[in-house]
Length: 221
Image 1 (cartoon, helix red, strand yellow):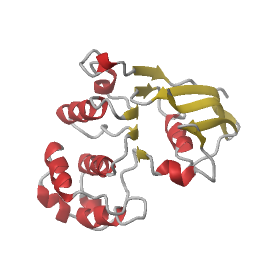
Image 2 (spheres, one colour):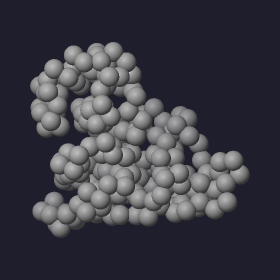
Image 3 (cartoon, one colour):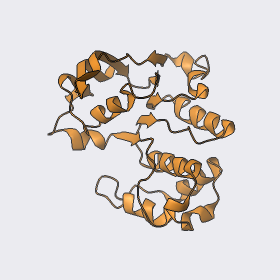
């Protein structure tokens, strides 16, 4: 059953076609790697799904519900979007996390015990919670944004270059975590080979979940 359905999507920017009649169907539990050169609209696709941008033509629907001004807030409650822009706030890491989980959509779902488990999983010390977020390294910020997404309790993930600042061991750990969960639907934009080389013949893959690597179409001038 289709969970995400994109049909005839077209976007122009400065007179150039970023997307032209783009189609994509994703079923629940699917894992997709979206690859292609920088600047051809991969991140734009995620912004369209989240309703941050509006296409020139075409439709996007999630679980049969069209993405539009009337539905976008409900859709964002269901989807965890981790951007390549990790500058998500100021203050201590702990304060930032508390603020994010004070929003109405996230209220009362922060599991502090799981937070510490996630810190350990991503090789981060507990005292990082007391550090100023803006002073963290790029790799530390990436891991904190991933932890926030995981703590949100959602099962649909849009991941945009979320392992670019990580070492090989951590890259593989992130890939195995997101692609190894059969209940999660994951679309990942990445140039890192670990995503593309995921073992789709592993035990969860044999349950019928789809693992795909798709080349993003080049826009036309």
